[in-house]
Structure formats: structure tokens, C-alpha cells
Length: 253
Image (cartoon, rainbow, N blue to C red; front, top):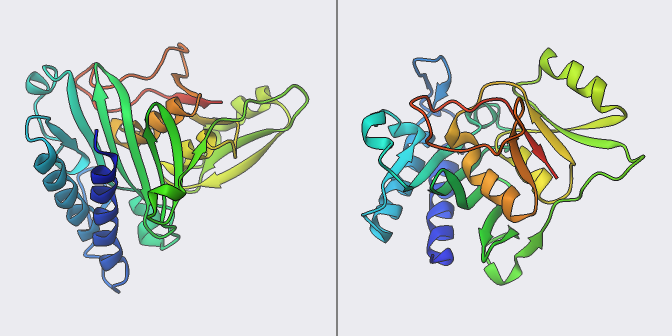
């Protein structure tokens, strides 16, 4: 695993996104589910897919923007790249900077490697050598290892919430949790806040797709945390069914 080359792919995709982010017109249109799609999504998609295939053409790539691959083909994969070229398109359109490039490697339904890059913040979360890292800027020698911060008895829970998807579904969960404060964030950065110990927990009781979570899930795992299915408590897994929608889940330190 050539981490320098993989970081370069993610950062290159981020640069493509920023070129369009600087324009007045993002070329936005609506997909079939009414979610926004911009020229930046597509530019990042092509940059990542081309980069990954140049590294190893034998590893298939599943991207949000190429998600029509048949289940009959996909279920044969034991190892593949799972990509969200621009997670947080709504954050992108709002220009709040909380959007990310996400690249994950899935092996036997488990995310074993991940990169989450926030282009506007120029911050990268990634895994390497079974550890989780946070890099501000591009000099990999400056990367800092991160780890989760488990909740202590009597401590106020720090709970990650979403800027774009806040709703009533969390109310009963938070009431059971007890004394808490919310930490708002967009895109896959929410999982990274748990990974670096800024928050204790992220309950996601709303719809997401597998590409939304895979890269940051790998970072959480490497930081010592867990991503579990809300209903069963079992680890969240990938490419186990025809639908690419995740069940509701909890990210725990």
C-alpha cells in the first residue's frame, strides 16, 4: 500500500473540486433521488478512478458516480475500492467548506484502509500501519496519530450531529443518553470527530449509502473506535446485499 501515492490521488481530486468551488456556477443538477450533483463530483470521480486504476487495474472501483454496477458482478468482489468523490455536496453548494473526498479499500466486507480529505480545510484523515492519522497540509512527516476518547462516567456526552440532516429521530436516543452537548459537522467529517476524540459518539439514525461511510469508518476503526448497526450492535459491513444503503448505525469511541 503506497500511502504517498494514495494521498496524492485524494489531494488531486480535492484540487479539481476547488477549481470548481471557486466559480460562480457549479453546474449543479439533480439526480434521480433529488440530491444535488455538481461538475465537481464528476471531476473528482474521474481523477480518483483514473488514479486508482493506474496504481492497480485489477482492483475494481465502486464510486457513487458509477454505482450502477450489477449486484451479480459486485457480490463476487472480495477486495475493491469504495469511493465517494465529493461527500457533502449540500455543504459544497452552501460553501461552508465541510465536504470531503473519500477513498476506502474494502476487504471481505470490512474497510481496511481509508482517506478522508477536506479540501477547503486542507486536512486529511487516513489510515496507515493499522493506525489513524490527521494531516494538516501536505507534508506527511507532519501527520499526527489520533485516537478515540472514550466517555467517562459523569462526563457530559459530546455527540456529533449533522448540519444537513438534523431531525426529530435523535430526540429519544439523546434523552436516554443523558447530559450531552451537540457538535455539528457536515459530511464524513462527523465520523472523524469521533476518531480524533473531539466527540464520544455519532448516532446516525437516518439514511446513508456505503460510500458515505467506508473511508471514515476505516479511520474510526484504526483510531480504536467502532461503527455498529444501531438495531443489533453488530459491526457495519459492506457489499453484503444488493442495496447500497446502510442500516442506521452508531459510531462509538
